[in-house]
Amino acid sequence: MPSLQTQLDLACQSIQHEIGVGKVADYIPALAQVPADKFGAAIVTVTGEKALFGDSQEYFSIQSISKVFALTASLNLHDKKIWDRVGREPSGNAFNSIVQLEKEGGIPRNPLINAGALVVTDSLLESKTTEDCTAHLLKLVRQLADNDSIAINSEVAQSERETAHRNASLAHFMQSFGNLKRTVSDVLDVYCQQCAIAMNCEQLARSALYLASNGTDPLTKTHIVDEERARRINAMMMLCGHYDASGDFAHRVGLPGKSGVGGGIVVVIPDIGTVAVWSPCLNVNGNSHAGTAALEALVRATNWNVL
Ligand code: GLN
Image (cartoon, rainbow, N blue to C red; front, side, top):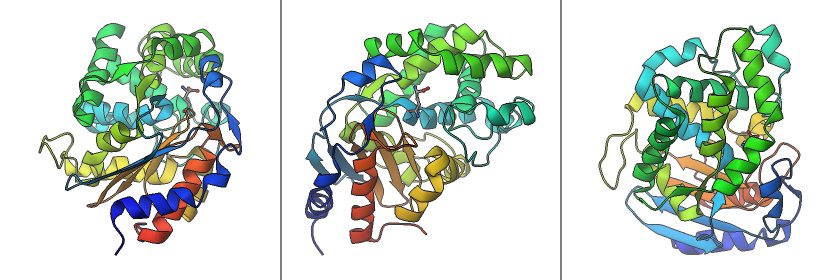
């Protein structure tokens, strides 16, 4: 059996020609500046083994991957009540689509599309200032990554906040149905900060390890979420983590995963570990093109898929 490092090297080397295929997200102006030819990957196992490849130490904004951490925080705060305000079905629509909201009474399909994530962020704001809420999320991410240096890229946060017209529309629409408790402005303030959390592949893989280990960090032994909640977060990632390409991702990779328009993807291999990849060029669904290809190659070699 080749070493973990060899398996990662071989998988990543086999897809180098895919780097640069697709488009860097440019609807958030600060993201358009990220060089298209970046590629990094990291594996962290539940026993603490590590393998790194390429730009694995470079920081990128985690964007929608933050939705997993926000959902974790919300389940801990509100338990099942969050499911009264957000569904748990794949949407089959783009991550920032508004079309289903009207027919479905302002209840977003799931917590991993933008509309759902805005409701989750609203739930975290309950009786908190926007600053306290952002600090609460950042504290959780630092705990998950076991790294207190993780920070928010304020340039990216500001850039998204200034151009958040779609997300503002989604939030206003949901507010008209009574599914937002705080002001649109407060919700967007926190949401844009959480999306701009900057991490590298190694930190990102490390931060999702609790999901590979029944909700408890296997290295620090810290209880993060109950086992049942961890299972449900993984279920959401499997079904909805790649928006309207979630089926395609399951078909190719077969693991619970979450992508972000910064080009990052994190996947969970239950009882084994986590993998994070980063490459900023996205496919039409807003998921990293080369990152998905690397995960597909890795899973083919390791047989880590759960399907
Ligand atoms: N911050 C981004 C947005 O709301 C996140 C989207 C994503 O990563 N898919 O548009």
